[in-house]
Length: 415
Image (cartoon, rainbow, N blue to C red; front, top):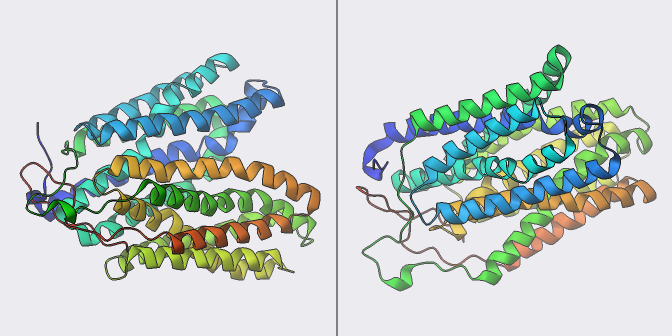
């Protein structure tokens, strides 16, 4: 077995990150062209009723959480991460290709609980692979590399929805899902051609046992609760924005598009900037600052009297999203340095759980006014920030993923 180790040098790392970037962009496009139109697909092409749509939208993400968690656990115990990337890509390709032609609701639900959860592991496994490569070669720049890949994924979501509209108008849902299948195929090809197998993470030799940082279950659990609190507003605020603009600010719901576009335009350079700062400033400090930006934005939005106020607040909103979505991955990985697969999967699972919590909160906002959605988001961000302040990570010892033929080095500090 060929193992990509620390001795392979910077050119090998750059090449690996390039192909991981292709994987992240491809899987981002595959999801970005499908997810925004999933409800429309189920209602118009499959002719599912509201109850069936609700069941599907609950079963699909829950199955993804379970599947990705199991795969994350396996990936940290055997040297199969590259094989998992290829397998997850293949599962996504088959699932999308079948969905392009199948219109039976029961069969689609079966795909949603079998092949779809396998493909859901592609995103966390790509970042876990990146963590191993970066920690083995240049641990001080791990946060920068992770943030760069996360930026590539964000860019795919800037391109994906407009592309999906063109695909729908040109060939309907069949063309849409065939294109998604092609993107999963590209991700699998990039994994086969550009990635080598990495060893399972192990404790670095040469140091005493008490140098190994141990994250207690309570610390990990409370940190995950904090991330769920910080993730929920990401869905709640976006879902409420068009209705908030049209009902509370007296504007046009379509004006939500430019506001979200402004946020996305600011988010990408901020994510890169935070990744660069992660080489000089502790990841924990950057994450706390980002959470504080979330409190600021949602508090401002809850009292906004004009669209201009919302537009001005997008700088704080973009900083919040960049910190939670980019730096947050590195933070969880630093808590579990020997289990990058599980750490990245746990982080990824926080978003669908937060999204499910956003549904009932949006329902309350429809009854009591959409300002409530932003007020609740501010409270959730404040609670998440408080939890992160109270729950401190353990001091980092001399532990890093070790590779066959390479020297392990310590990961970046979080505390």
